[in-house]
Amino acid sequence: MKNVTMRDIAGRIGVSVVSVSKALSGDSGVSQELREKIVRLATEMGYVNPNTRRAPAAKSLDIGVLVPMRFFKPDSYYAMLAPMLVQELTNAGHFCLLETLDEAAEEALELPNLIRRRHVDGLILLGEPTKAYLQAIITQPTPLIFLDFYDDRGSAPAVVGDNTYGAYRLTNHLIKNGHRDIAYVGRTSFTSSVMDRFLGYYRAMLAAGLPVRPQWILDDRDEHGDVRAPQLPQEMPTAFVCNCDLTAHRLMEALLARGYRIPEDVSVVGFDDYPATPSALPALSSFRLDYEAMLRSAVQLISDCCANQNAMPGRLVIGGHPRYKDSDGPAPRP
Image (cartoon, rainbow, N blue to C red; front, side, top):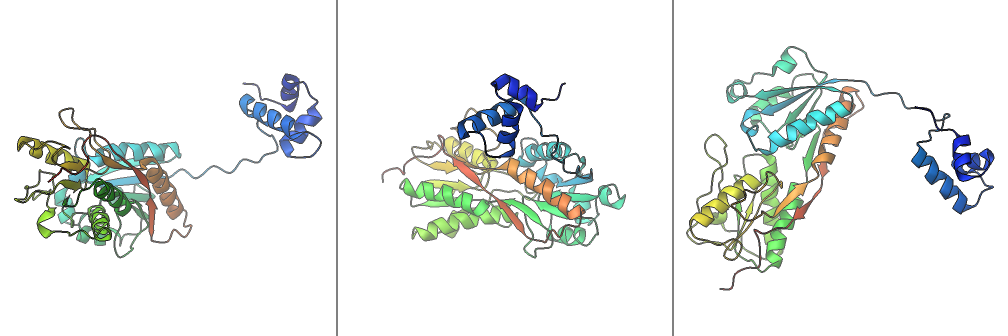
């Protein structure tokens, strides 16, 4: 393909090459209207200034992605996120190796093959393992970052979503719609993300002067950590804030089976905006994190760590926005 020159631009617009040069370099001697016209045409034609030095290409790295197996299941959030992370690493010019961490290896504190066989320059841990395993993996020398969770000891850099703010927004939305009896569904000790989402719910309730009843903090996991429908309380709230969309789907199924209408009798909100709501259920109101920004940030962070660019431990928090659909509405009248 022929490189576009200033002469090509000048010929298209009917001015001298000198005028094009002044417009593109920011020099005086051309009107603002003509300058904008020349710059716009140069962009459309794909003009590249030959005097512009190209930045040196980033070093290609072998990056490992480790996902605890209990998170990596069909239709799960991590089953969606992991391929996107692999693609983001590929787009950045890196080679990605994905490994899952099964429960037996996690309990035995076995380091992944990616590290034991020295296959990778850096490691992204996607999803929170047990505290004991976390302590084991942070002691090895391979550069490491956490994605979608953080360690309260700040043992490695982390990229997380703004879970507290997201749950606060969802809960506050229900409160503005007249709900006063609101439950939270999620095992708060399961991951830092689930805990932070509970704290967002808790903050909204406290700010509104509403009670947080212990009997309305509902568990949503079995002994293996798999999502299940929570046991409904005897005294029912008018709304539920769920820690993830899968939990919200299970809850809505249980509510509909008990004869409750959604949202006429009970409102339900989720978190993640993934996976798609089954067609038999009302479209779920949820909070969607900026996944793309999270992944870009994680790739840049692990690159910095591998380059020894003083990537200090800490949390990079990525925002998002609520998406209100059909599963929530005004509080029912007494």
